Image (cartoon, rainbow, N blue to C red; front, top):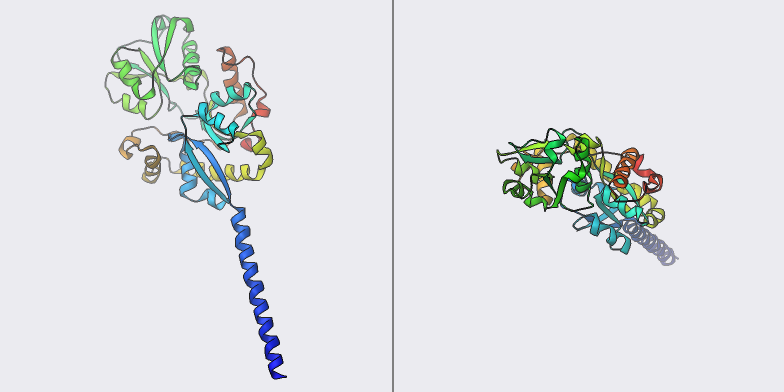
Length: 326
């Protein structure tokens, strides 16, 4: 009898231990399944700082996201990759994604990236100190370097010319890579250049070069210049994933804006841009937005119509996922 009772007790213990083990394995399995992998197309530029902050401080991990980043040259390559299924999310200039959306590609904004909130803007027109751009007559026969045609730089360079009262046809826009723009001005290949950081800051170290214009502040203050986009299909199938991504980015933006000029922030940016910390300290780093501005995106689309990039302003309500404005 005693042996029987011992055997039954031993069996209950073994069954309990087995149940505990199975439950533990199941819990770990469920936790593993809760982690969602996101493939994101990026560029190693300052605008992407919040994404790298979210990775560094574990904001994505806390949302159950595992982010795999792939560098591209921008939305021009990121968006085709997005449509082709290579990426789940891509970052790029608003002009590029608005152009793609206007052409019928099923994409939408899920989080803002860059807004020209501060004055002066981080991207400015640089020219020679002894040159004048004060009157419309000063623009006649001049050349301005832009990175590529049909880009956000090309669009707002034209808007700046007209904001100064000059005529587009009086100015020549020449394609020059950002790294070469400063030398192009010094060597008289162009009269001015629409420059972004860090190239603008580096060029202004030359005493012969100065800022001559602020296209965003003069043509469209507060422009919603860059954003994160995904396909409409992905957003519809994974609304919770999109919300988690948005939450992590917003936490990172809060941290960045509060620590914009700290050594820790400079080190984070240096880590993914390969720019020296001392160089970054000379750059007027932008503030980043928490929500997308549909009014500014509409204004950008109107400029695109004006300068022949698109035929009509697209449906901005359909272009911006509601989560980007909440």
